[in-house]
Image 1 (tube, rainbow, N blue to C red):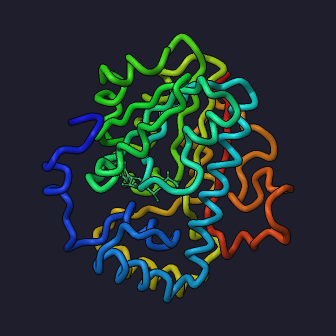
Image 2 (cartoon, rainbow, N blue to C red):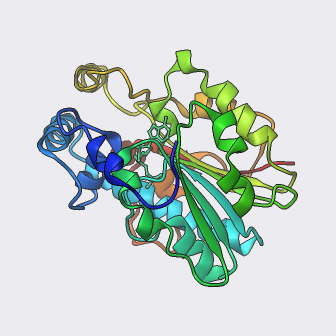
Length: 272
Ligand SMILES: C[S@@+](CC[C@H](N)C(=O)[O-])C[C@H]1O[C@@H](n2cnc3c(N)ncnc32)[C@H](O)[C@@H]1O
């Protein structure tokens, strides 16, 4: 595991032959960091689910609204796992627009995100950022990392960001154990911000076609009920676990897209 600025090995580790979630998401968001395999995978999914780009945009808008919400509750520390390639309104930028002293630790396991660490590490002078090249499936490694401990104070509340990342953890990789381990490390008054793709609103035919695009089995959509179970024992902030397009979205462009088109649930939960 490495931290901070990328060295040549980050570029060498980039596999352009298979689609990667960070790059495919960047493609759907209209970014520039994607390869032919990512575009082919993204297009195959879009052919079945034409609203997939809207889903990505709405998820990103949810992230920004949720960070702004927790920042206004006085949260000054963020652990953002599954960061993605930098996009408009990164976690530390939103948090520091509310409180410039906010501190953020970013974590991702894709070397392409590591190559963007410099952008993710550009903090307001009063705050601080760190980047860990690490895997959500190894929460102990994340929690024990010296750069995490140097950046975040675990005696003060922290917002754990699990935005559009849990659906890349298969059931046999123990998503509940992973969430429990991370949540268990956070002090009372901390928050969890999570979003998760769902196929609950898709037809059986569409689900069958979408499953055919999931060639490596790495993508696991889950229902709202299953996501709620992963976050057991936490207090869901109003309006609870809902479509990301409906979460405190009164000030977002109206009318809001349908929950079927967005097919992604989101929640902000407080650790009692
Ligand atoms: C769809 S993007 C979401 C980015 C950002 N959180 C957002 O919502 O805008 C998912 C990110 O999770 C990362 N990811 C997937 N599995 C991961 C894992 N096991 N550990 C760390 N990061 C992971 C991917 O590399 C990708 O950058």
